[in-house]
Image 1 (spheres, helix red, strand yellow):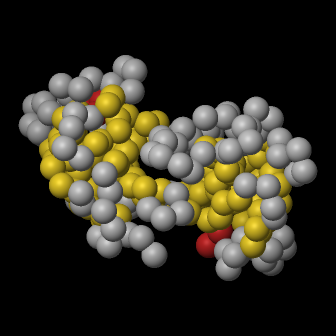
Image 2 (image 1 turned 135 degrees about the horizontal axis):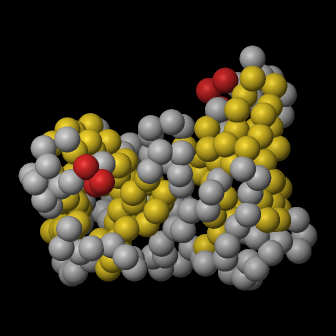
Length: 111
Length: 113
């Protein structure tokens, strides 16, 4: 699976949008971008995924660049409960492929 | 949505004993499950892939005799840490494939004293 790089940490003011970038410059045409987050001492939680179109759900929006070499996860109105480590993973969806986690971004939402 | 139940959430055991961790897919069948280990403030490290009805596949550097994996049914995989030592203390997490990707268990905090 393609490797991803993310900033180690970010701060965001409560109520503001949190924009978390991810670089995946070696992504293949059939690889999707997945985002998960891990709140302290819990298992990772699925947030959103996409192939090339921008995606939105009740939790977040995912913006993927046209060349697909990077993406941004947007939490539109961050709350204190969004403080977590956010992981960006790329992989194909057919078959069963193991997730390899990078270092992720530690997001801290400030009151 | 899909739920993966992991049990126990916390366990303390004495050195030399064995500990079993269970991972169940509650509302879907999982022919493949994954086991991860996580150290404090570090990312998840894949340990092994658990395949229903066959032997698990271990990542390089993971001792298969130390971390025994059994996947006897389509909804249950177990990880047994054998002859545990303090250095085995860690956070263990399982995951299973569902309809949109992978769902993770809530993790097991193992402390070996």
